[in-house]
Image (cartoon, rainbow, N blue to C red):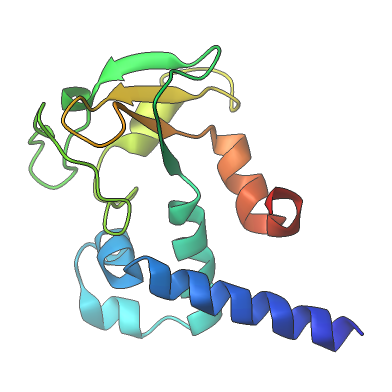
Length: 146
């Protein structure tokens, strides 16, 4: 029975990985060094990708208690260039690791802080960065969030 559950989780994970471009999401984690990324075992890449995928969602409303910031507060970690105010969010390729999302999360002392970015040019006017806690729990215990 455990093998069947494990196999089902792995298949669901693989399907989810195809839904988002893990190469685009993960490459910044490895400082855009594809050789370094290819040297990592698949299970670890899967974990890192799932963590990043669980970072965001789009919303039409601001979640209760969320800290609100303009999307221009998000900056590319390599060149410090902010995201444009007219950004159209693409969750397929948006990389948690390419931008200073982790830094912005650490500005708030509690790991349950949620940050909401204004994205008026997108289909949904808000990009929500989940709390560090929720990112972790969604990654480690996906069965609780189906």
